[in-house]
Length: 286
Image 1 (tube, rainbow, N blue to C red):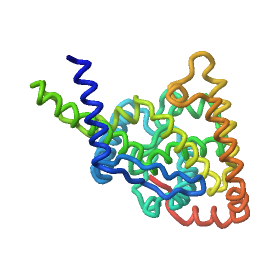
Image 2: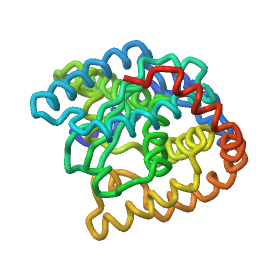
Image 3: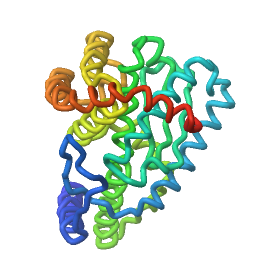
């Protein structure tokens, strides 16, 4: 009976996806991302839920004395994020005006993430254990910002909603009640615990490399970063690495796109003085 319900549920999800149609959240950029996405939940709903979930994380960190404890690390991270934000218009014209917010959380975990709408967290474990140069940290932050720009959180929540709607239909037939989908806890779980798909990870890699290159960070630093992650992992990779595609596949893909974006990087370097002047004239993201 359970197997039949799962099969029927999967079929209904496929039907829901085909009926709902697909869209795309971003412009393709130089990396050429044009994959259609299932986006059943509105951006407003997702961003509101992200704000709620982010506040919960920050409140917990503050209670534990783990919020922005190292001013130098906070300045470093926010300065890099500020430069990357200026380049987000290549994918979304509205993105530079998002309510971006960045914090550093004291934790031994090697991790970083960006929720929908630009809510960013970097864990000190990543900084301490990898000792990343600014260009390597830009690769991490650009990758995580890529998830937000491509609205992967919204896409995953839409899939979760489609699955629940399908199971609700099955449950109604079988007279099995289903709980309502609570978006904030669901989004928090998707962000902190559940891995992105291989396709979503590849997209975030490519968006991140382009953001970094446009901001004047050498896109090849992404390759060095993942090589560090691979060495750090050994036989038991850290959570941040273990939720991603194989390092070999990632590095191969990054080599291709880093080379493709070298002209953007070199062009940004020529005007880096102006880029830094503009950055100094605007407040850093929160």
